[in-house]
Image (cartoon, rainbow, N blue to C red):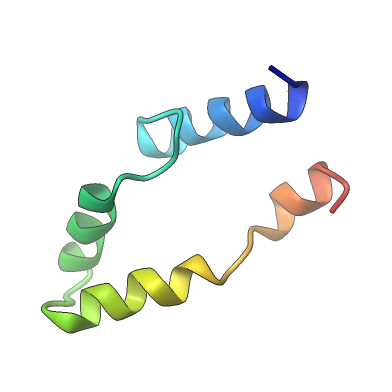
Length: 62
């Protein structure tokens, strides 16, 4: 496993409790807690998939 992958997995474990990143269930729960419901949850998940993390991109040289 490359160092970059190990760093991303460690970050995801610390942030989401899962080395593979947030689960669908995690995202739904977070958005419900933020007051969203129904289709708005799915729209927010899809919208979020298009955003990148500038700090992670910079650390990986992207």
